[in-house]
Length: 84
Image 1 (spheres, rainbow, N blue to C red):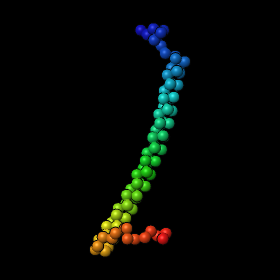
Image 2: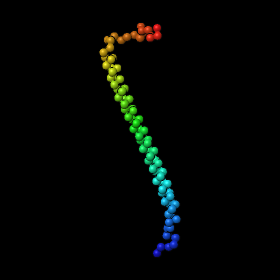
Image 3: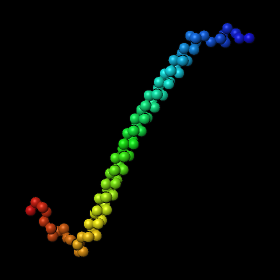
Image 4: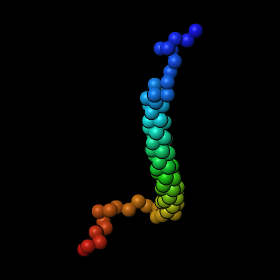
């Protein structure tokens, strides 16, 4: 047999509903911020991948130039700087 103290009224449930609504709102904000951060990280990874590819091409070109270059190493002390 239910007692009068066991019966929950609508006004008793209101604080729980408000707390649940606030928690849901906070979670939605966190999810939105996490989504924005994920987009930023994806863009950063994309830019870094492009940079890695460009650096790889430059390295390949430098190695090719080094193999095709003069057979004797040059002495930088014998060369004048460009401003002389």
